[in-house]
Structures are given as C-alpha cells and as structure tokens.
Image (cartoon, rainbow, N blue to C red; front, side, top):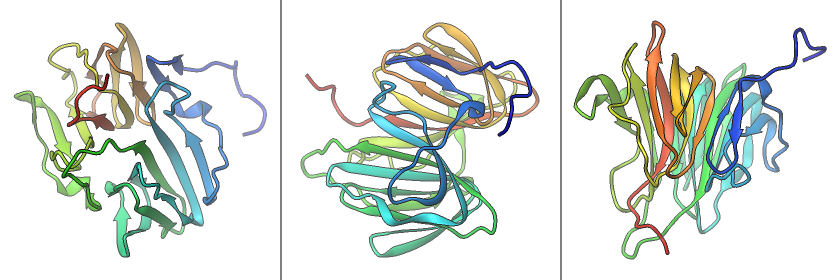
Length: 254
C-alpha cells in the first residue's frame, strides 16, 4: 500500500454486539491455516457479536484450500463467488463456480476450493454452527444465483429477492439476494431476532442501523445483530443489491 496519500480516516462504523459497517479500504490480511496464496479478511465473527463467521477471500493464481474448509460435525459452510472462477468440491462431487455461483456444505462435509482463474478470484465465505432438528438433515447444494428468478419482495414491484437455499426445515439458515431499484426501500424499519451478515454487490444506498442512517456502497460489509433496527433505501442510478445470511426455521432458545 505504501505511504498514505491523504488524512487517515474511515467510513467504517463498529458497534460491538449491535451492528457494523466495514468498508473495504480498511481490510487487512489474516493468515488462516489450510489456505494458500489467499488474502483473507475476517468480517463478521463472535468477537464482533455475530454467531457466525464471514470472510472476504481473494484467491491468487493457483490459490485455494486443498485441506478443506469446515467439516466439523456441528459446523455448516457456504461460499458465494463474487468474481472469477472456482473449482469447488464436497462429498466426492466437483462444481465449477463462476460469478454468482455458490456451494453449501452441511455439518460433517468439508468444502475444498481451488482458483481456476488466471488472475484473482474473489469469494464471500461463511461458517456457522448448525442447530439440529429431530428427523431433519441438510444436504450439499450448489447453484448460480444469476439463474434464479427474482420475485417481488413484500408485494413491492421495485424491491426483489431470491433464495439460494430451500425454504425447508432441514436448514436452519438461508442465503438471499435482495435488490432495490433506485429510490426503492424496505416497506418499514425491521426489528427482529434474526441476525445478518451482508455483502453489497452493487449500487449505493442509505442503511438504517439502530436508528442511525449510514451511507453504504458496493464492496461494503454489514453486520446486523438481533433486534437492531434495520432498513435501506437505494440512491444513485443502479440497483442497491446485496447477498446476506439469515438464521431461520428454529425456535428461540432459553
């Protein structure tokens, strides 16, 4: 990076246990065992207040994880391809994933990743403990979000959503893509028990986090904790679109 070119400042906002806006300019490299030729930044984590861990991964030429990611009996994993081309494998199956491709691995199944691009490939990577339900068991799922049709969100024609995993009780979480047309917004400010980790894929907007309006744009990461007020509206000339996780299909624990 070299010497600073301006005053030291940051758009990032961190409220431990509540919410965070993490701008890409401040990300640093974390060495994660098993990954080689990769630049990895840990985004959401229990140290921030999340029950999951999110990573932003830049895989260099020949980079990857040939030792496997996840695989513990109580940990599920998910990867979404932001740029480039990845060969992923799990449960003795191989998947070629390009931009918008994704792979979900249930507990006990390791995910293997290898960069197939001559240049960098960029990934949004996730892990979380699985909450089992008697008689239910998730399975390996792969797909490409660009091949899934949007549907209207809360009956609004200018806000659109797609689900990347089945709406099935076998799964205790899901990944969605939410997209706001310019000037569109949530129908109301939400307050709920679910938490989110979101990576902004395109556009600009204003996000209400704990009743504070914060500007956001492509490349930003947002953590939203349980019961934190949240809502967004899009500004500018292109859709505000982000991919995000949500815990679901389970009762609150005592």
